[in-house]
Image (cartoon, rainbow, N blue to C red; front, side, top):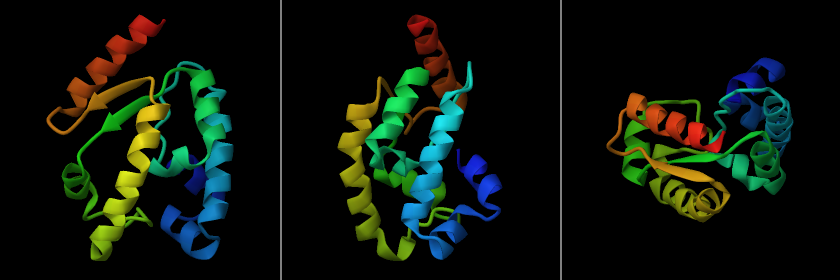
Length: 138
């Protein structure tokens, strides 16, 4: 979905946050959820903040089932510490990032139809689990 938003906005996510603010980004994100949820037979990769608006989850659940790709805080830090496209992830404020992580966890768990632990699994293993679950849901 971030790619959809970036294309429509004509600027990277981090710049949207800097220029237009988080609320404007969340508005664009909600529009992208609606657009993506209308597509058939699709995998929708959301950003972590999509859960901030309950309506987003309702749209996603109408489109199919919601998978929470669970990872420990340490794994997430290792995966994205060198990226500069996550505006709310600031390595200089790990306490703030950890607080954000902890505050979102219960909502992720509540919103998910299916949870996959990703700490020790490869992308191929994770995809296989999700494909299996999708077959069960069909």
